[in-house]
Image (cartoon, rainbow, N blue to C red; front, side):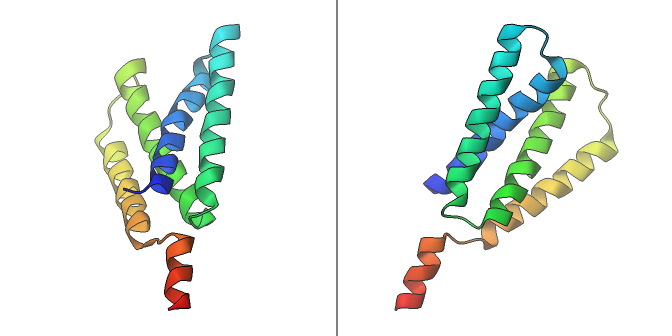
Length: 115
């Protein structure tokens, strides 16, 4: 996996924290953690979008963040496990993986055009 995709995955990881923080933050420290997570998440997504197609970056970011948030809510916050929900998340992740597999970096496309 290259550096730009690692940024997208890192951004999605922090997205899970800020989404959960928006729901569960209750004091200055948890709100501060939520704000830091928002900053890190969007900064990494924007940096990845400079080399990867923005639409694909956003789709992967949101898909992974959604899957991570659902997982965290079930594991850490007692959200009920629903088979249908999990199957739909898996379908979403299949789409995210597909987008990643068919997307090339902008530099690679430009190098191919120069040849």
